[in-house]
Image (cartoon, rainbow, N blue to C red):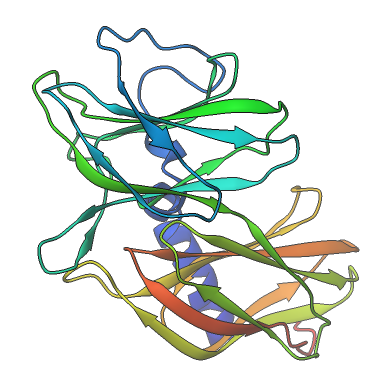
Length: 274
């Protein structure tokens, strides 16, 4: 059908760019997660980030010098780092410098490095599920040796909103923090065909000239089948087609361009198509 064709075309058209907007990991340069980058300039200790707590200021104490924050992590924690540049008029401008998360041993587990015209700014850096308990470090730093950074940084838990049934009531996704992610789970059979329905869409963009939106990504629980990936900006339905496998599916949602707001998400069925 025409709607399904449009939805799939949209996925193909925006996937590469929006993956950068969504996670930042795809835009990194230099050391990869699991390595320890060489740093000629130590960052300045700047306090502790609390999970789902207050935003902290990141202000370079000198050219080329970053700010380092700590947080206490537990095995199994699912977290994201939110970050943005505060504008004079209350705007939330995308971050385009350097953001690194290190585990208690000093190994890099997530990072973003901007500073290049082909690298999109970010508002969110996803941290892989923690496998070690202890004190983690978040570094916010300039890319250039003579650069300065003035940003806001915060630490979010990934919130599980529970389960919905196919053709049942939806759940309200409320993304009120920058970089925040919420998840909804539904169970499906391989022979079922489904849609994604958005209602009560109410988001406000934080970035001038950028349209508010919510990134939706749907995987099966085993992360072997990507069912849907796109940025949605209004109420409506998107046909996703057959599930093809019997499993739990997880709807992951986070905002783009510094948007904040909410939307009700549900999973209606649809007639099988030939």
